[in-house]
Image 1 (cartoon, each protein chain N blue to C red):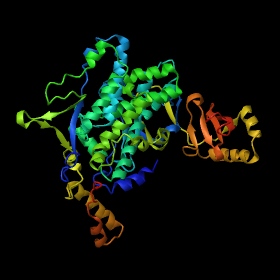
Image 2 (tube, chains in turn blue, red; image 1 turned 90 degrees about the horizontal axis):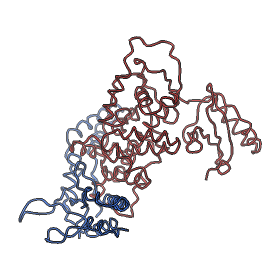
Image 3 (cartoon, one colour; image 1 turned 135 degrees about the vertical axis):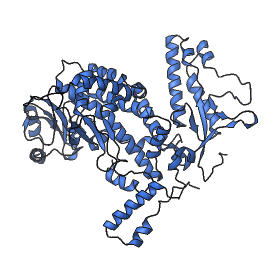
Image 4 (cartoon, each protein chain N blue to C red; image 1 turned 30 degrees about the vertical axis):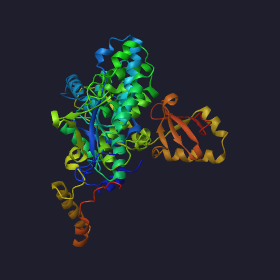
Length: 179
Length: 369
């Protein structure tokens, strides 16, 4: 089951972040263990990046589906803990205990907004993220008008008829999702 | 790589993809613009015939550039103008003043100026060519999914009050280091490494992109930033583990050869040591070494005739990439001339504009593959 998609606002991305211990905690480790932990964290970071999309200026990223959270979290956990047997390191890397239903014991945090009964997962839609570049619109904006005027001038220079010019002067059809 | 004019023509059918001819940024001090391909530049030391009167102080400029580089990284010295913004002014722009700056600030002054200048130019070009390669990769994706990606990605950075994408700048600086590692001694690479660390965040984080895995990860992050939202919205399987997005990233040697480079000769008003950028447009005189002649005599007559024909052609013009290209690694300092059936000639510049033909043979006979 995937998230409900809106034809008007586009795909809803879940806002997530990876949970890691602060770097100050890693300073408690011996140099060789710290090096191993840092390498594992770097590898987990690459896995996290490969399965999510960046949100520049934010420490969060976009995930395709809520259903991916558990599986990706397990994958990240395996990468982070690979080859680690040192008790101090394991304690530092351990996830916070499962104490509330809203805070599952996962390596990925799903960002929430609101409070109390209004608390819910944060989504960002493709349409909102792309802003004026959102491609579902068919209305012309000022940039389209300027571009059309240039096309008209170029076409007239080529000696084309008004019918040809008008028929060609429509905004290109937006891409559609495969159904 | 596909021709950029063709790409632009196709992109013009995708809403908001192409802007109409926005000019590149201007250097602080203007000068004549010398266009060429990235591999065909060399620097010579030369004597100025007319000393500059009332010359500006180069050291003042260098101090200003120190501050600029601290705030904007290597893109304060050279810049890439995208083909999404211009049909005929896209490419890499490098002021000669920047070459002087890097030659003076980055490398040991005991190294000959022409050599330091060539090193500096290569570092800047190898950084900027990554911006071209990334733009090309994104453009290919735009054509595939028929959705504008490059412009909205820049817009999202602006909205986040960011001037650059950290991953792309780290990737670009990493490329400069990786290319230097392939052809220069460790001492030179260390100098470049130290210089590039004197940069803002993103630019200075290139160490994460030096390994092959890190380099690829950064390329993919650039693509995710530019095309990810649209690609996922259109249910293309972009984030599927089995999808290999790296196939969209062009070969960097080809990107370097195909990207126009504009040297801005703006140094005449300063009291810099003389430096002459020389473009390799033709090789009028080639001297064949004894070793070369010995190898040539062992080849079939048609190969020998092909070589004679190549020499005549070189007197007028060097062939385009990849038939003529700068070699790396153990063959650093050599250029390769590619004949038919995988046969190649290794040549190198000697003195006074004369080149030496050093080796000729098949791909495997020459130690490749």
